[in-house]
Image 1 (cartoon, rainbow, N blue to C red):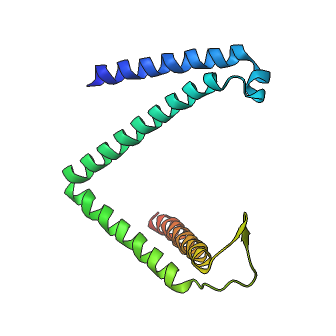
Image 2 (cartoon, rainbow, N blue to C red; image 1 turned 90 degrees about the horizontal axis):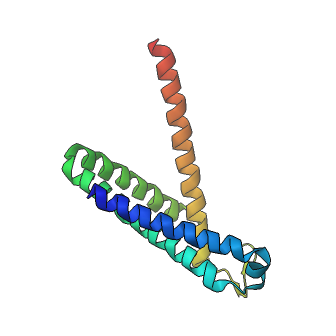
Length: 146
């Protein structure tokens, strides 16, 4: 498996290098005017393939580790549950009032969009406060234990 991954990484690297050399050889003006779309597109596809492979491997190994380590699975589920509780509280607290009409492109923001933005901000503030309190608590505990 390791040898196969090294070969795939080498092939993708070589394709990326060849595509980069072709883009550099075309020059800035060709890219700005759009004459070299055939040169830029392969580089983008290579980046998409690499991103897809990385995401697939990350998800696979995270799930594998979660199911082989049951203690870690319990802690992960507790953390996800706490995060969901914060999101639900944030959504319940945030209002859907629009003091002025916010324009989003050619359309106006709806009450649902306003509620979701408010919920995101409230969740951010709650998580920020929890992080700050835990850092302060950890620092005080470390100082007291010495």
